[in-house]
Each structure stands twice: as C-alpha cells, then as structure tokens.
Length: 365
Length: 267
Ligand SMILES: Nc1ncnc2c1ncn2[C@@H]1O[C@H](COP(=O)(O)OP(=O)(O)O)[C@@H](O)[C@H]1O
Ligand SMILES: [Mg+2]
Image 1 (cartoon, rainbow over the protein chains, first blue to last red):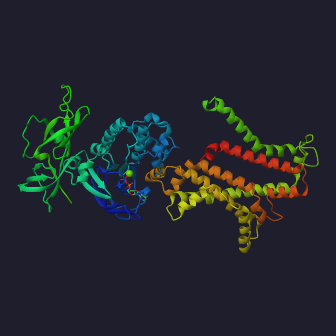
Image 2: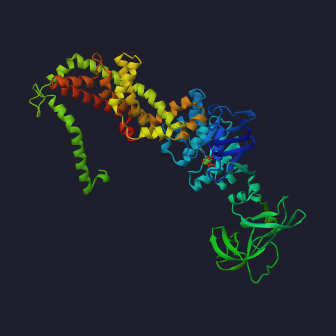
Image 3: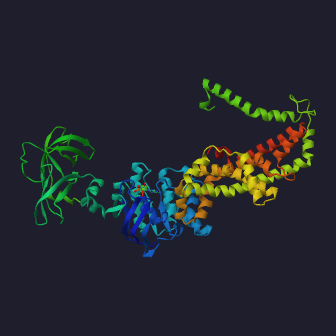
C-alpha cells in the first residue's frame, strides 16, 4: 500500500459565530500515525471530518501527496474511516459490510469475494462473515469496521475515538493491535482522541488542540517532558506547577523564585521577554523523605511539607503533600514489592526534593 | 405466559383492553351484521340471512366504477405522496436550512387539517388554473392530504437512523444517491411502508376533499356510499361498507406480512 502525505494549510471552520477550527496547518508524514488530542469540543472531530470531506472547510486547503483535494467529494477521496459507534450497516452481514466499498468501486463479485476473505483474516474474524453486526460484540464490530475500511486500500485511515466505546482491557489490547497493523501496512493514519494514554500508546506524533487551535505538536516524549504551555502540562499527565519570577540567569539555566516561597534551580531557561514563568515538575521526579530535622532553609528544589493523603495504586503510590507555603504537591513513588506498608503516612512531616533537570520552565503569556 | 401479564392487575388490564376492543369494533360488527339481513330496510337485529345484497352491490355499475376509481386514486395518491414525502422528510432531517426545525415540529405534532376548508381552497385554486379533469384534481387533492402522513412517518424513522452510517457509506465510495438507496432506505423501509399505508387508507376513505373535487362521472366510493345512503337506505349500504372494511383489513394484513407493520407503526 502506498502511503500518502497529508497536509493541512490554514484550514478553518466557522459555525455561525463559533470558530470550531481556527487556521490550522499541519503536515502528516507518509506512513505515520498522528493523534489529535484535546478536551471535548476543541475541534478534533471537525478537523478529521474536513480531511475526510464530510465537512467543507470555511477556508484553507487540504493536500494529499501535494494534490489539492479540498473540493473533491468524500466518495472520491479513497478514505478509510472508523467511527466511535462502529457505524456498521445493520441490514448487511459482516461480509456484505466489508464488500460495500468494493461494490461501490464496481469490483466484480468474484474478485471482491477473495478480498473480503483476506480482510476478514486480517481482522481475525474469518468465521464471522455470515453474521449480522447485532450478533457481534463491540470489539468484534470495530474489527469489522476496520476490515471494511482497509479492504478498499485507502490512501489514509481516519479514526474518530474508535475505541471509546470499549471497556478498558479490550481498549488497551486493541490499541496495541491497531498500532501494529498500522505500522505493518505503513498506512498514514490520523486519530482523534481525548484519551492521553491512547495518544501516547499509538501515535508517532501528538497534536494537542485547544479551542480550535494547535497548542503543541510533537512526539510523546516532547509533549510530556517539554510542554509548551500550562494547558499542555496539565492536560497530559499530572504536573506540579509553581508560579514565579526569574531571579537570575546563569549560563543556560538560572534561578526562579516561586510565589509560594521556595526557590527553583533550573538547567535550561528559554529566552523570553517577561520574567513571569511557571515551573512544572512531574510527580515522578519528586523524592519524598522523612524530615528528621533535615535542614531545608534556603536550598533550591527542596521543600518541607506534610503528607495530606496517600493513595496506593499497586506498583506506585501517590502522595499528596502540602508545603509550608501552602502549595499542594503531588509525588509518585514506585513501591517496592518486598517491603510491607507505605513509606509515608498521612500527617508525616517530610522533605520533598527533585533534580534541577526536572524543572521545566514555561514562559507565562 | 409472560410475567408482565400475571397477577391481580392483569385482570383489570384485560378487562379494559376487551372493553376498548368492543368499543372500537362494535360499529364495524354491527355494519357487517345488518349487511346480511334478509329485509328491505336496515334493521337490527338482522332478520334471517342472505347474501343477496352483496350480489346486488357487486353488480352495481356505479359501485364497481367507484371502487376502481378509488383504488386507482389511492394508489396514485400513495405513489405521489411517497415521491414527494420521502425526499421532503429527508431534506427536513438532514438539511440545515432556515425553518427546518419549525416545520419538523409542526409535522410531528398531531396532524390537524381542516379538510373541508382545504378541499374548498383546492377547488378554487384548481378552477382558477383551469384544471377541468376531475380525476387529476382528485389526485392532486388527495396527495395534498396524504403527503403529510408519509412525511411524518418517514421523518420519525429517519430521526432514528444513525447519520454516521451515511457518512461511513460515503467514505467507502458511495455518492449521496447510492448512500440513500443502499443504506438509508433499508433503515427507514418500515416507516416508508407505514406512510404509504396511511396514505392509501386516508385517500381511500376520504370524503371532504373528494366532495369538492369529484363530479357526477368520477365519484370515489365514499361519495357513492353517501349518495346511496341518502337515496335508499337498504342493506346494500352496509354490504358496500363491509366490502370496504374487508378490503382495508386485507391491505393491512398484507403489509404486516411484507414489512412487519407493527414495528413500523411504533416508530
Ligand atoms: N454542526 C455544527 N454546528 C454548530 N457547531 C458545531 C457543529 N459541529 C461542531 N460544532 C462545534 O464545534 C466545536 C468543535 O466540535 P468538535 O470538532 O466536535 O469537537 P471535539 O471532537 O474536539 O470534541 C464544538 O464547540 C462544537 O459544539
Ligand atoms: Mg469529537
């Protein structure tokens, strides 16, 4: 299957006064999988449907392998699309559902039959061809939908929260399976999700959207480790955030004085106009130790706190701490299999510390 | 037996159901009973038993002609209202134009058409237009009153169709037209059938519109029946009525067999 490069150039979609998608430009490498990630209503589905041709952009262009498809009707775009509710034709059998796209392309019955069988094998439903969608489980239905989308050898695959209706265990195994299949076929894929784990698991590149705009585009590690905004830092994973001001610069890094009283040593400080910054620290970067009269005083990246809540989650525990300055801190610590009990309990006086390299500076707008 | 229909409450339910059935069906049964009465006037209880009134009715040229006209008219009205009503319902549900919601709401509310006034208005419009053909006028008039029934049933079944099915079909290479035939229509088939049946029955049974638009040459069954009733009220009138009742029931049964009308009517 030849994979397509997809490019969006300044596309916008306006609904009366509401701008659902605002001047978005994006390039999707051939054979890669990207995830549009963001809260509900941020314009992900609208974006995807514009690429599919189901929604006409108010302005801007869509290009596939540099060919302008902005005005090509849906049914000539050669697209495989999966919907959250599967959208299988209830009056057709599994085989007939899969054959639908081939039939629309005028492919002869005999040739279509072989390809349908192939697709059924691909999605591991060979013995289900004669059933009706209502006779299948949710996971099986989505496999049929996948087979139906892939059998036409689409130029790209579009997924709109395709696993959202499945329960957690099945969803996770389908994520891995879908990703493996996508990589094996080398199929350019665009997925929409509001589930960060799904995006992290499946995508080469994550596009974080907010209110119709692209907030950040990058690999999973870039997005997680170097969020460009407070929004991204809090939307992907959990972050501790300190509002503060740059106190001084030293080489690439410097010192930030947080409003809650503590001081933060940072390794790298972006160049920026204002000195107002937010420093974000991931919970797993924080080490929690017994206070034992440990001197905290003026040292950076160290803070005295009291344990307010402990949540045991199997291999990790979440510690909710309150600093003396009144700020809440969340720390994740891996549990040791052989020690019994938790390292800290509610009410303990502790010291939280972390490396300068864990401090990520976000300039305030 | 289904457990919903057991217990003390069930008897009350049965009693009410039976009472309702008697209330609805007794006039029809009464008509059927007097149609076999061996007397020259309509009497109840019927005297003796005879089928001679049926023999008389089935040889009555006026009645046969009227039946033919009514059946053709009802078929024409059904086809016409389907051709107009299905696309109209589709436009109302899927289209995004000003007033669509208001029109939909109006059509889904209980249908009230002052047919007598509609008929008179139609007569004026059609004669103004110089339309002299009574059959054509009847057809137009009947479509005007039957199309809303089709729009209504199709509309309500269309509202239940998942729009994603149509989107999926289109991404798979189906044009809008093919999507409609291959995906949408099978989903709304029962609604279309129910609408068609309503249209047929409403047309077949219509008096107030036909009254204005018919002439002496072309009179549908209800008009002939009424005329007969006014002239000689002998048991041939109930015999005609019985034929019409049986005809209507047969239609319903056939449709029930074909598309599962019960499902269609509950949309
Ligand atoms: N047909 C429509 N008419 C008006 N507003 C719409 C329409 N479709 C979507 N919107 C609005 O556009 C915004 C983006 O919607 P959508 O793309 O579905 O978001 P997401 O998929 O990220 O949840 C939302 O505020 C939504 O209410
Ligand atoms: Mg969405």
